[in-house]
Amino acid sequence: MAKIATVITNLFEDSEYTDPAKAFKEAGHEVVTIEKEAGKEVKGKSENTAVKIDKGIDEVNADDFDALFIPGGFSPDQLRADDRFVEFAKKFMDGKKPVFAICHGPQLLITAKTLEGRDATGYKSIKVDMEYAGAKYADKEVVVCQNQLVTSRTPDDIPAFIRESKKLLEA
Image (spheres, rainbow, N blue to C red):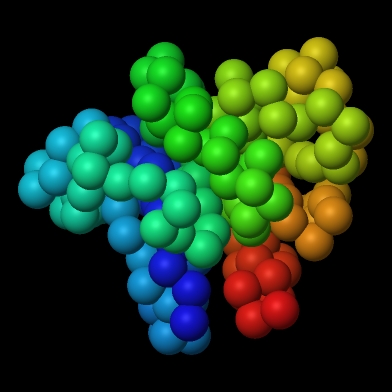
């Protein structure tokens, strides 16, 4: 089973973390939450969901994980201001490991300069940013690119996002 790095901080979109994380765990995968420091608690923006952080970014190495999960909300925008998270995400993309980004999640991939030539989607407000980053934006519930990158737009797309992410984990 896969070990999934999950980069997350305060103001994440609650269901965009909780629903996929639950589905990944139920399928036998390990979900490891990563923020600036281990042991702290971060809160969701909609339902104030509390998530305990397993590892600090300085304690982890992309080589120790099989996949990367980036929930949406305001979390990805905050994380991309920290070069450590940008480099962490870039290693997954460059290493062709599965990456699952929903809603505003692709913002971290934009800053990592890893979307050029890739088919992807995201929340409507970041469409132009994704296009400027070189992505081929598609307004669809889920886009899978090169059997590596799974992106979705909103919480409404979570079932399709989970379905396609799990397919990559099982491949």
